[in-house]
Amino acid sequence: MARTIEQQVAEAEAKLARLRTRAKAQETRRKIIVGAIVTTEALKDPKIAKWLAAALRKNATRDVDQKELSSLLTDLDAKAQSAGAGQA
Image 1 (cartoon, helix red, strand yellow):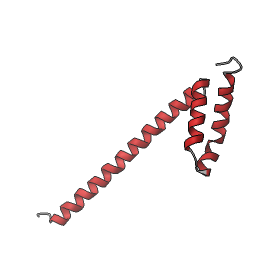
Image 2 (image 1 turned 135 degrees about the vertical axis):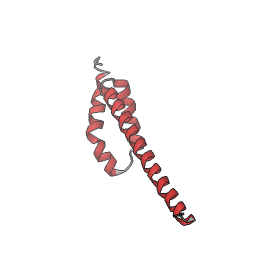
Image 3 (image 1 turned 30 degrees about the vertical axis):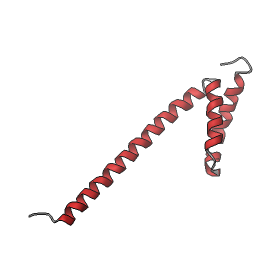
Image 4 (image 1 turned 180 degrees about the vertical axis):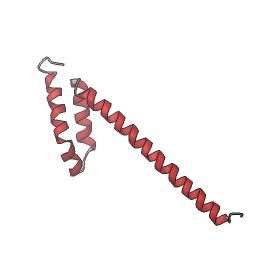
């Protein structure tokens, strides 16, 4: 039985919605991976720690985000300070 134009449009819209959902999930996974790598490296390298802490303070402006990042910022600040103490 032939599908109506409306049915074809609905199917196309549903397919587009599924593709958008997959694209968003893929972008989220990519952000998680990059964030994990940058955080790990920042906790090893004082220069990266200093840069990341500054970037987070500048860009994470919502209270809920600042609260979530507080312990990480403490760790990053400690690593950044270790450069002055001769540790790396």
